[in-house]
Structure formats: C-alpha cells, structure tokens
Amino acid sequence: MSRFMIHKGQLTAFSYFRPQMFSTNLLVTKKSIRPEYPSPVRHGFVPEKWCTVFYPKTGVTGPYIFATGLSAYLLSKEIYVIDHDFYNGVSLIILFIVLHKKYGADFAKFLDKHIDAYENNLESSKKDKIKEFQELIEHEKKEQWRTEGQKMIIDIKKDNINLQLEAAYRARLSSVYEAVKGRLDYQVQLQKIERKLAQKYMVQWIVENVKKAFTPEQEKIVLSRSISDLQKLVSEI
Amino acid sequence: MGFGDYPKEYNPSVHGRYDPSVYYGPKDTAFGDVKLSDLGSWLSRRKYSPPAITAAISRAWWRWQMKYVQPKRTGMAPLYHLLIGAMTFSYAINYKRIKNHRHRKYH
Image (cartoon, rainbow over all chains, first blue to last red):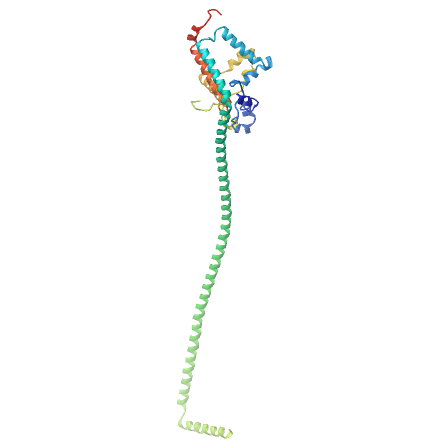
C-alpha cells in the first residue's frame, strides 16, 4: 500500500499521452513515453481520477459517500446477495490486505532492484555499442588521414619514376652519342690511314720514277758532288 | 482497413510513432465534458460499426495497460483490476442462481 501512496504525488503518468501532444508538438510525438510510475490509485486499486472527479461538487468525502451509498443500495435491494460465498470473499480480502501490507514493500523493492539491473544492463550494452561505433568512426577517420599520406607517397613515387625515366633517357642519349662518335672516329681514322697510304705510295712512285729518270752520268755527278759536299762539311767541322 | 492495419486516419509523418491507445480521427468533445443536453447528439456522432467498436475496446485496453501495466515500477493495481473484473463478471453470469439465496422477499 505504501508504494501507491508514494506514487500518488507523481503526475507524470497522467501526462503520458494526450491527443493534443500529437498534433501540436511533433518533437514530443517522435518519442513514445513509457511512464516510470503507474497512474496513481487509492486503496491499491481505485483510480485516483475516479475520486477527484467528485471534488468540485462534494469535497474530499464525496467518493466515500458515493461508495457507501452505492453499496447500501446494492445491499438493501439485495442486488448484491449476502450468501455463503460472501464470507469467503471477506476472508480473502483480509488475506490480500495483510499480504499486501506485510510483503508489498519488500516485494516491490526486490522487483525494482531486478528491473533496475535489467535496465542498467540494456543501458550499458547500448553505451558500449555507441562507444564501439565511435571508436570505429575514429579509426575510419584515421584511415582516411592515412590515405591522404598515401597520396603524398604516390606523388613521391611518381617523382622517383620520373627521375628514373630521365636517367634512362640521358643514358640512352649518351650511348647514342658514344655510338655516333665511335663511327665518326672510325671514319676519321680510315681517312687518315688512306691519306697516309696514298702519301706513302705517292712518295715511293715519285722516288722510283725520279730514280728511273736518272742516267748513270748524272748519278756519278751527283755522287761526286755529294762526296765533295761531305768533304767540305768535314773540313768545316 | 484489414486485420492488423493501422487506422486510416493515422499518418506517420504527422503523428509520429504509432500509439495504440490514441484515436487518430477528428476530435470531438471529451465524454466527461459533454453537457447532458448534448448527450443525444454526441452519441449520434459516434460510430457503431463492429470494426469501430472493436477499435474502441482495443484503445481502451491499451490505455489501461499504459496506465497500470506497462509503467516501469508498476504496482499490484492491474492485478486487482483484473481480479475485480473477473469477480464482477462471474457474479453477473451466476446472478440467476445467486438470486435464490436472497434473505428477503420484498425490498
């Protein structure tokens, strides 16, 4: 019973759903509200609203007067018959009241503990999930940041390859240069040798022809002349 | 509107999440605010087709559930309600028999 007394002050359950909530404020409607405490009741089962509805006309005793009047009417007209089952009912009600008073609060505490544990479990699993997803998002962002780095690495690799291409180009250029130069050098050598040979044979031919042209007298004259020249040279020394 | 469908008046984009205890049709004066002189016209504006009556009972059932059964820290009230309902029902169906146990002939 004490539970219901505690809950009486809570008006949250009353404001649970009002049709106007659905038309005026869309934001509220998006959330379905499950009240934490039930609608307040009197004596364990009579809705509070059924009692307060009498207040404007009759004051606080209204509901009790009404209940008394109604039961008096039902009993006096024997619409409710006091038969043998009635006494069973009375003993059962007493039993219920005693059980409610004696164990109600403890039982409620026990159930509340369990429902809190259950809800905490759900809440913590939800929080864990949210944390997990946040970590995933962080990870994803980091990966994206790393991919940015990959772009830089790709640029560097491109530069590298460009450098390699340049080096290969230059190497080929130089090899072409070497090859052409070799061929040209060969031509130069060839021409030099040809000219040398031509000169050599020309000199031989001229000398031969000149020797052929000499007569023996001329030879003598030249010989004697050369001998006298030599003598002159010797005497000069 | 077939079995298991939402009411025709329910529009998710306007009303949001579906609440089985709410009547989504056009609003009329609440029953508690009706003057006795207007009661006849008020009753004539109600729908009495079987689906409408079923829907009304379903809404009432859900309204009771949301008040007493579904709250997180609910009490014994819903069980007592059901018990009292069952008692009243069984009294009503046995009334013919119980009537014979009356103590007085005239009241």
